[in-house]
Amino acid sequence: MPDDAPKLHIDADWKEQAQAEKEKLSQKIDDSPRQPGPDEFPPADMRALVGSLASQALMGLGAYADPQTGRAMIDLMGSRFAIDLLGVLEEKTKGNLTPEEASELKEVLSELRQRFVQIASMIQQQMAKDPASVQVMGRPGAAPGGADAPAAGPRLVMPD
Figure 1: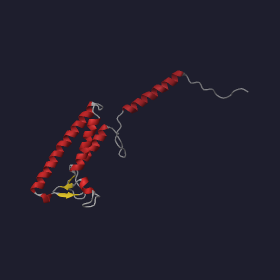
Figure 2: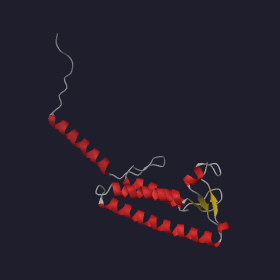
Figure 3: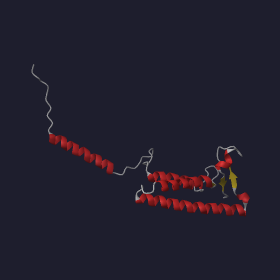
Figure 4: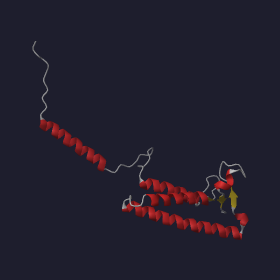
């Protein structure tokens, strides 16, 4: 019985050309900087990690106002914890970061440490001058005077 099925012949040049085009397209996609969409997260990299911890530290230093009162909320212990985490990150990644990453981390840490000292000093001065102007609160969600309030540390509400 004769074989009537069509025979497919693919030459090697065609295969090589298709593979080369595929590799070229793949390289173009990899090389192009892709911006995340509005519903996407940025890439999980060193810059994002440092930025996340720095934002937490800044939030604790009163950089963001309380949405309900509009007043600065300061959480020195929370801020110090985020700054200390960045310090641990710097120490544990020493020699494994690109020069740009190491420099950026060092600059962020230096700036946050300076701000921490400035804010802590301002609070100390304000409390010495007028203790009633600084409201000390427990952590959100903690029962007033609860067992976890002293360990968690106070939050301060600064005057307008």
